Image (cartoon, rainbow, N blue to C red; front, side):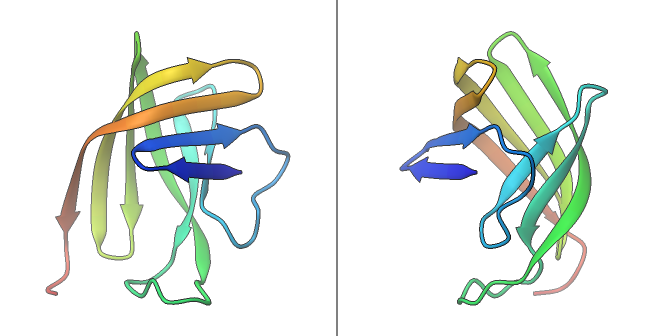
Length: 102
């Protein structure tokens, strides 16, 4: 489950994705599954898809690489809080590489 407050995002541990919200499944081997918008349209109802990616952590820096409907992305976060049930971070930077013409 994700809860956004300006630039701070909080994820809570869950056993499955909420069908109507974005989220990440962070896997110990460095891979991840992103539950994300499947198109360029952000008008509800939003159709979600699961996309493969990877992640890395270096101290309090957390980086996610993945694919989206238009290409690939890299997002860097700074971890504010991490425990067994909650991950809270703030986005530091993002880069989207489009492989289609907009």
